[in-house]
Length: 254
Ligand code: MG
Ligand code: MG
Image 1 (cartoon, rainbow, N blue to C red):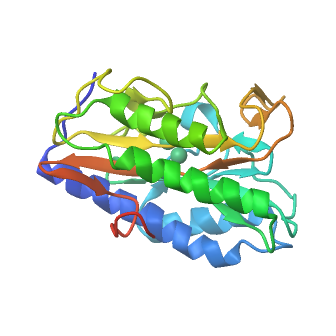
Image 2 (tube, helix red, strand yellow):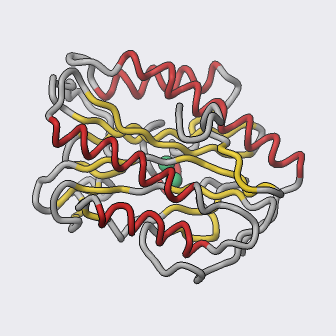
């Protein structure tokens, strides 16, 4: 069931989203060669708690950590560990925070030190694919318009689309209806209405989009070892378009 949020609920979702944004901004300068993903997780968790929120993912369906931190060929749901980031890595950090019962969910991919032109291309165009999706958010459009815009953009840029994982509604639970796939047909799927809140999250790869799940039962990894990026915002459908709840709301920037 797709829920329509009240003005008060949108305010709480915006507050949760802002805490997620601040957590990204806090961690961004710490993403450097030598830091372990476990350390980033600990610092992120402490920061979320310092803001009066709790990490949405910790304990969610048994996920054991506050943040999902996925390195290189890991697409999503990476387990923080003693693994130290190295120059040339790319790392996707997915952050969820719950404030007064309402969630925010946003992922960004970061470069570690100097990265290859190919990896820069992957990061740049996965982020742009997210904004292509966000541009389609307005009352009267359909989920399929978002999905199609991401698919068309990713395909045009020769990036693989991981299809097994999708965006989702966000509210008093971090994952709710509707599903927001990263591929689809324009004009199809649920119609967008003012008060709907959804997370849009393209997961794109440099190689084949085929994936497998690690023996930890969580971490999604590319079959061919190619690198993957993940960008996600939680957004609200407003009377005249869209509001990004997990950004600084400067459209298309951060
Ligand atoms: Mg999400
Ligand atoms: Mg997420």
